[in-house]
Image 1: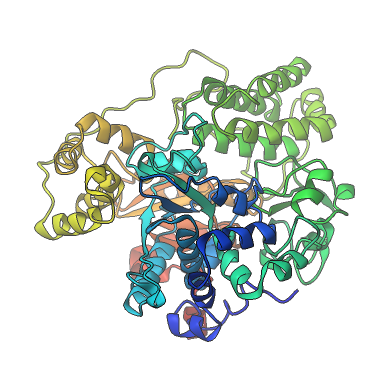
Image 2 (image 1 turned 90 degrees about the vertical axis):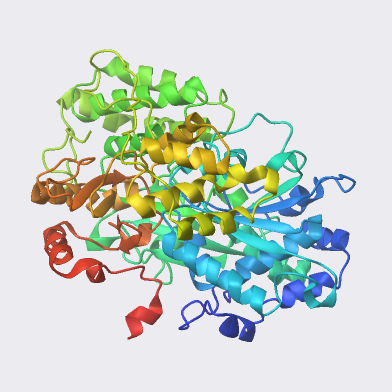
Length: 433
Length: 202
């Protein structure tokens, strides 16, 4: 598939307005402004665009939930908090093609009747924050943002808001809290942000890549977009491939591409390094269940990966070779979740700590067989019992490795040590905290 | 942030992880920073000034390197919230430091994609070289070492952040030299983000 989102990102100065305009920047916005807002929403609905942040929710439907008759101001918030372990696709879009992101935000503003869009970017992406701010200034000076865009009477301002280090801020209601100057902790829903969002006003929150797809839908049409991928999984898709592959990176292709191709094909991951064999793949960021090598012959689409027993999530493939201890890998991820749990819901906050304690005990060879059942029980008492999907996310690595790699957990207990202390790990493992 | 104190696993009871912020020197924004903050505040509705709290705290850190209790009180006054609300926010986000840090804050990504590529060893080499544990600052006040969770550059693992600058593909065998180079040559030795193809083509 010809790249749509990343077609010119390798060109020098690809982020400048001049180069972006050469590649058709803001043509989608111009087209949108000549169309009725309701019609723009219909186009996005017809394209079948699904949210690229993780959930895969239909974008047009989300926009349609915004009440038309509300007297309150409306807002568009672009979720650029990209923090899911293994994910670095929005990073590329914002750094190399920022005007595409701005254009997507502006079209979304027009469609739902907002005059202001905020881009909430994670604090660690300081250089990307600067790049976005420069792009906003450039677009504004050239009349692509600001007042009366293309003589349509439509006004739109975009502001870039920098977070300060919190994975939970990527969860949409927690992001709104953070944008309001508070701790990033989730809100009880309903009401959903489309009705009561930022400052209590109707708000659409979309991922960077989701919004970056919108200009192409306006320019080339809904049918073209839907036709790029399998049914209900249309459009271009960015995949992040990391771990033990030869060619880690971001790759744009259609969702016809299989997970196996993404790992092995020379156009993508290029297979495993050093002649090693594949052991496991996390297909959609750390919050998605791990898959075995023989489960990868499915399209890397929302529905394809779901059929394989996992989720496409943020399309972040973390590839692990046969030197990887899966108990260690799980402990590594649960360390992440324990650190990042926002603390609002007891099952998630305390559960993450207990899961880490148990995993650490097993990994260092001090576990007992009954710890495996205890671990499973703790995990099952978190899932479904929290305000936001974080709880379900943090149990995915635990439950899926217990399912597929129970023998490895048992080997740790039986042998009283980690049977796979890979050379790239901490020397004399077991004191990592 | 974390709610659980660093402790030996499986022993003892949990205790509060709350650390009271240091009082620090008397603090007020410089006129330039105050003007910058007021400019940022115009991005939000006037009655939603609290949205400028995170930007205000970044300005504090720019000015004095960390966020002291006195600075929190000043920010509370400028933004129009209570000092407790400011402390609530400062203590939540990992990028705000409630105590002084070194000239260079080294954040080594420790999450899976980086760990699969040797990040644990990078941390150990840096800790040994600096004679400190993660979370500590060296005696000269030059380096603070932090183990950070996923930084979002997993294809260039292991990645570290040095203040606001990226350094990518840091192999354990090169980590020691990075410290020497930072000491002798400053932040110019950092790789930056590989996506800056303009830099690479020079």
